[in-house]
Image 1 (cartoon, one colour):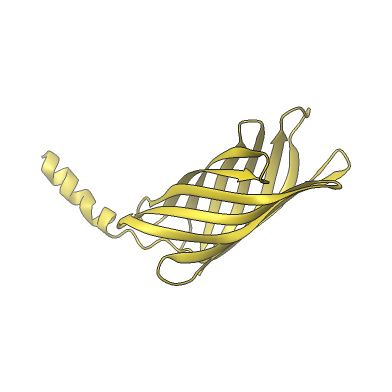
Image 2: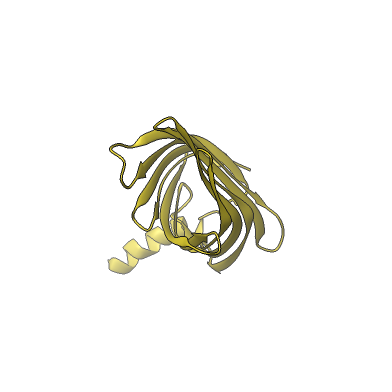
Length: 178
C-alpha cells in the first residue's frame, strides 16, 4: 500500500521543470531597521539573466523614505548555479553592493551561497547566507524566498532578508520569468 502511494507521487516529482534564472520582478518592500520605531514601506526591483553553462547576471534595488532620508539598498553582480539534482541548485553570487542613507554612502561587495529548490511545477524556495561589507566592516546576511507560479511566466514571490538580525527587509513581488 505504501509503495503504491509513493509510486503515485513520483510522476509529479519527476515533472518538476527547470527553474528559470531569467526573470524580472518588482513590488513592495518593508524595511525594519533596528533602533527605529516603525517599519517603512518602499519598493524594490530585482532581475536575473541566465547566460551560459550555469552563469547568470543578477541585480536588485530597494528604496524607502525613512524620517525624511532616502534609503537605498542595491547590488549588481554575477552568479553561478550548480545542479545538485533535477530540481535543486547550489548557487554562488558575487556583487558590487551599496547601502545609502541620505548623504551617507556605504559602497562595497556582497557574496552569497545558497540552495534553490523546485517543489513541483508551481512552487520554488530559496535559502541563502552571505556577507556584505566595505572592506573594513560588514554584516552577515541571511535570507529566504518563496515563489508561487501561476503559469510558466507569471508568479508571486515573498521573501525576507536580515542583516545580522538588526536590519530586516521583507518583500512581496510579481515576477515575470523568461
